[in-house]
Image 1 (cartoon, rainbow, N blue to C red):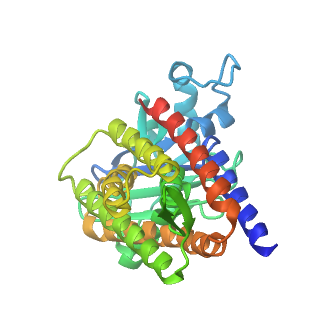
Image 2: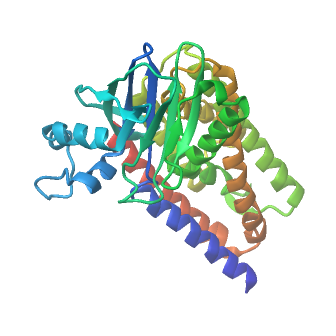
Amino acid sequence: MRLVKQSWALFFTLFLLCQAASAHELSNGYISLKAESESTFSGAILLQPFDLHQALGLDTNNDNQLTWQEAQSQTDSIQRYAYEHVQLTADKKLCQPGTNALELHRVSGQQLIYIPLTFTCPASNNLALAYSGIFLQDPSHKLLFTFSNLQNTFTQVLTTQDNKVALDLASQSTLTTIKNFVYEGIIHIWIGIDHILFLIATLLTVNLCRHKHKWNPEHSRKEIIKQTVYLVTAFTLAHSLTLTSTALGWYTPSSRWVELGIAISVLLTALNNIWPLVRRLGFITFAFGLLHGMGFASVFAELQSTATKPLLTIASFNIGVEIGQLVIVAVLLPILLSLRFVRLYAKLIMPITSAAIAVIAINWAIQRW
């Protein structure tokens, strides 16, 4: 009875994750600001269209389909909203904002509205930024703020409880930068439902073995743990490699093709659980991990485009991604170990879950084409 309950717990958990894939993701955004001189600053704020719609009602024809044309038609409202909720002050006096055209940016599979920011301030050493956007609509909203000048860069996560920051680069410690990028890496893997579903699809058969063209329970607990470590390590090494090389600017892949490739990797991994054509999962997991690393790098580029310590921030972000990933594995593995002798698992739960993941991946692939 306990195993049956665990099997239904796993199925229900994965069902909720699959449902979340088609729903609105966690509310998050980014602000970057760079000191061009002692008195001029430039940058941008990137927010999710859904969040801006909730705040401004961008869906003017009320068809529940927000289009880029609808957003562009309300450029003035969006820019006004941005400057009302992103305020830069010098000696507690508001800096003068400027205006620029809106853009669409894709960050880690998300289409975000990119609102350029420019400020002109009186020369001062007492600069501060306050952000109040989206919190009224979603108190869980979080925004990663990056500020830089010619010498240094620092980052801080802004929340509804902590939405103001003094722009004193000299007082920002290396530990603060590490903490913020580790945190952002953890958050990124947890809101990256495509990465989560790939990891789940990869691990759904570690508690099974193939015999006479059928899935059978793997009796050796040691072998299951060994296989899990092997696959997770392959995925980790691969995405760490491409995240680092892409973030350092050694090459710049097309984000569209990367996101499409990630969707296809989830699809093929899920289908391979149902019709196992590839037996050496380590190699294919490593290959697909290379794609996922490029996906991680796309969001990382927005977080530290002006960083003066790229290796430190890359390493911190990567550590955060691994911590987030290990938490998922730590939750999933004990359940899989318990379920390997449940007959319904190999015959019903695993195939249905894999099929659901495959359907979601097909939907992603169509959207990203």
